Length: 95
Length: 329
Ligand SMILES: [Fe+2]
Ligand SMILES: [Fe+2]
Image 1: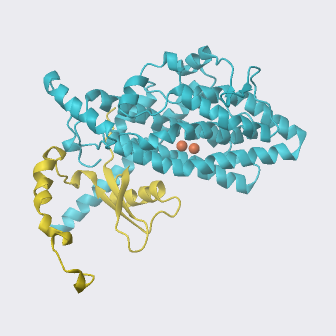
Image 2 (image 1 turned 90 degrees about the vertical axis):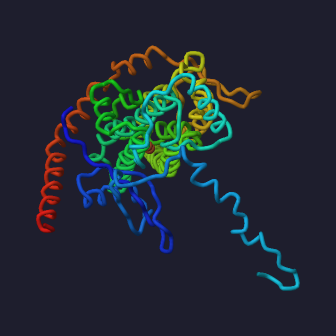
């Protein structure tokens, strides 16, 4: 097999007005235009989308799952970032 | 997909493995989903690549027996439905390849394994579609069996596989219903058409039961796959569910299941079925089914005939890129 490989693209779809684009899978395509067409055919056969983003997979930078604790643990102790940390007398009403 | 650079493919020493393995198993036991860049035992990765790619190959090869009837569908409505169904199966293959690729396998490599005959696909697609009734029988029985098998896979421990299965299951219901409705129409039309449906059932029934794989006493990989929560039910459990669901549907059509030993067990509430011809199953898996050679030939031809398109598309993309760079300079 000495064929050149066709680049991989990640596909993101906005399913409804007001929703964010959401990752749904990937496609192989030679260029961005063909990636959009392939993504339409593969991921929106039943009106699942109003808008598609395709991003070259190689361009995505991800956090290391092995460093998950170091990355996210510090916020675990910052309970003062949540509204329930503060006590407001009941007479004041909803806040 | 995601970032393949992070996919940790180097071998880990056994000592390290023991601790990581235990932590991994604990996550699986707690119904955590495993994602592509998480640490996983090599066996888990290998099993999944093999299973997901085989599943993908089956969807792709599965387009062939039905594709055979698209141009000969009896009405425009049936033709549109069949075309949409076959297109869905192509889509299913692509969702699954995309899930397998998150584990570090490349599409080219997976495709090569199919074309060289190294990778297997479901035995069912090596049977011929002789009449229009076969199209109904495939939707009803083959997609019906696939649904039984795929619903528990929606809860598979590997995230991308589970998400692909959820998407697929949403689309499968249409496949089964269009098949059953097609058969219902034929059974109500004329005796001749009803005979055709019975003949299709006679040919597809046993191969459909074989789709669930070897019987539990001969199944090699089951225990480990169950522990890893890739598999949730045994082959025989799923096969029984399928028989219980399908026999009454056959009776509703006024058809006879081609099994003299079939009987309803009042006590267990299950339909007991006769012995499956496992030598036929082994023969078809090994490559000696009625259509194995034809299917592989068709896949290889499609790949070779498409080579110039892939080449041209890449050349065009490179030219465009170069032109853009020149303009910017
Ligand atoms: Fe499918
Ligand atoms: Fe299907």
